[in-house]
Length: 83
Image (cartoon, rainbow, N blue to C red; front, side, top):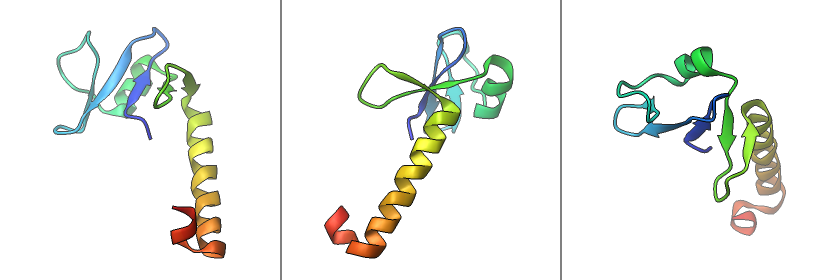
């Protein structure tokens, strides 16, 4: 999943891997993703490899479906075929 979220004002929140907090250019102190959602939500996810924004709920559903399909293909064909 992408580590960049965009709030309703168009600000991008990025994950700092060391602290596990999300930062935006307006804030110097990190926030949890739940804090960002409650203060600035709803959030959109920046699609990896493009500038397209996808609503977070849609992105989660798409990610879940991809995982289910991958697991089913691995079960039927074997992981070495679908990798």
